Structures are given as C-alpha cells and as structure tokens.
Image 1 (tube, rainbow, N blue to C red):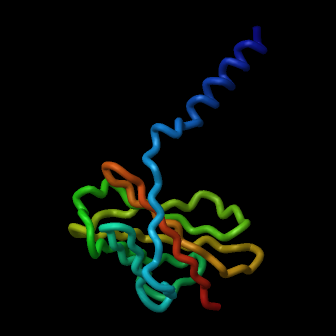
Image 2: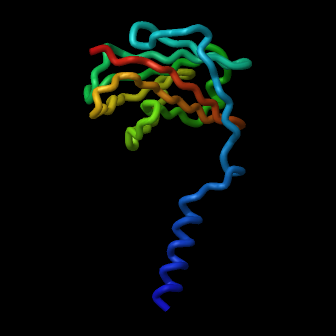
Image 3: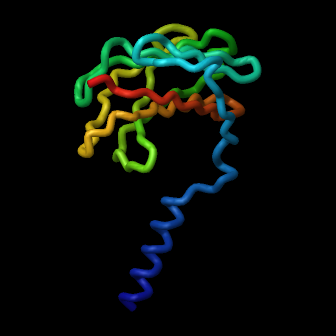
Length: 148
C-alpha cells in the first residue's frame, strides 16, 4: 500500500512540474542590430516590427545591486504582459536569478538586479531577456564581460 501511495504522489508531482509545450507561446528570437558592449552603451535588438533597447545603470560588480532598463523603441508596448531577465554563463549553472521587470512608463521597464558571483572567477556573462506578449514570447541574449 505504501508503494502505491508513493508512486501516486510521485506521478502527481511530475505532472504538476511539467508543462505542456502547447501551453507556452512560441519563442521569437530577437537579435542585436549591431555588435554592442552593454557595459559601455545600450544595446538595441530587433525583429520584424519590434525594436528594444537594453541598458545597465552603472558599472557592474558581482553582488552589487544595479538597474537594468528595457525600452521599446518600436512596437506596441500595450501588448507586453511581462518582462523578465536572468544572468547565465555558457556551461555553468548559476542558480535561480530570474528578475521580473516593472513598468516605469509606457514602453519602459526596469528591474533592480544583482549579478551572481562565479566561484571559478569567470566574468563572461550573458543576460537572457524574455518579453511576454499576447501572442508570442520574445527572447534575446546579450553577452558581456564584467570588468575587473
């Protein structure tokens, strides 16, 4: 009896943890208009009729708060239902560090974030940004190197 109860609980947990691919919007990849160094200047990404600018508020350091801002240069900001971002490195698990942006004005969102620390001393980061709209989820990433 204990085995069946444990198996049932395990199946329920797996079903709750898994999401159907149909429940997610298809992700549209956005790309930088030109190579950029987000440490020194904002980066502009675009696809079709959407253009976005991502910027950092100041020189960044690990474990020190800073602000990330996303501005819509072209597109329909009223369609955006959410903006999130996370920091990652190629080949490294950085733990949970996804940040939800708050709307600061029509077509503008920001989040106060903290860059995790890499115990190996690497500084080759990327910020992965997702914009959720009524019909599509848009994604882009911007690589950057934290200055030492």
